[in-house]
Image (tube, rainbow, N blue to C red; front, side, top):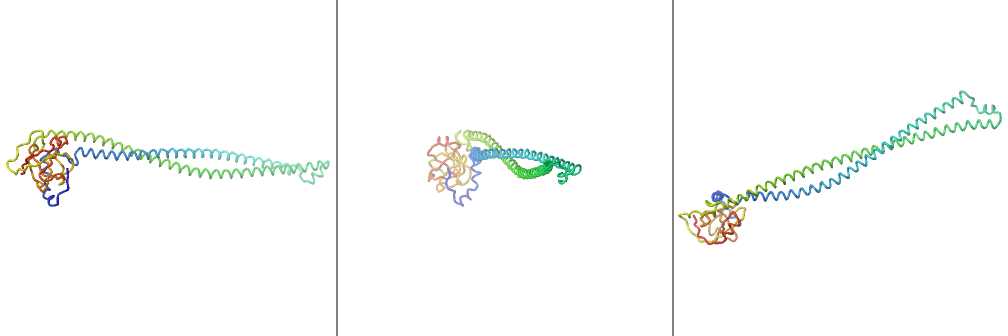
Length: 337
């Protein structure tokens, strides 16, 4: 139970109550007690689970993007292989065309040597040497056909070479573009792989932290259970309830009040941890810091307040709600000293 904090003068006057309360109890709840730590670790695990789910979603997305990236790399590599085959084919055709061109030039040279070196190719001589006009015309026509055939072959081979050179130039351009696209795709794929590895490592660290937290929660829960059991077993000097408390002090003023047990954890109105011996009072009736003896409970200190604590009423802190309920509400005559 905790009410509003007292005024500044009261806080200054009660600054040393924490030590007094700690002397009254050995098992009081603190903000850093095992139960509180376990609760904080559970909250941390909830946050870790949320972050793990987010990382998993990113990994699923990365897996899809990686599959697309790898498919693109494979497609570009296949295009590159086709271009290599086309380039090889064009180069072979160009080599054949060059060979044919060389052969055509050789044949033409041989024919020219035969016509101009070894034979008489003067059209007038051919005409005069012919036995008839038909023979002359046939001879002249043969010469023209040979010349035309040679010219046609050379023109065709020249066009074929130019066409192949143009095709090779286009193929070289496409290969350069494809190589650049493939390098870019591989870089993107490598980046995705790095991100995937980082996210997988991060997910692993989150899961290891969750496992560690679960182990710590188990240990802290065991400690909290043992602490509560120890509080239950404490009997004297503020341990409370296992054995009858000692006799009341010989001196002091007696006041009859209505007492109620409570088991809330946390800190008191003056900012100290709750513990055995912490008594909530109405400061206008019993000043904060007053030591008291409560029959059936033992020594206590007025160190807390409560909205329902008015006048001749007090609340007594117990380490378990079962014991607070067992105390219930009872009228007692306390000794203030």
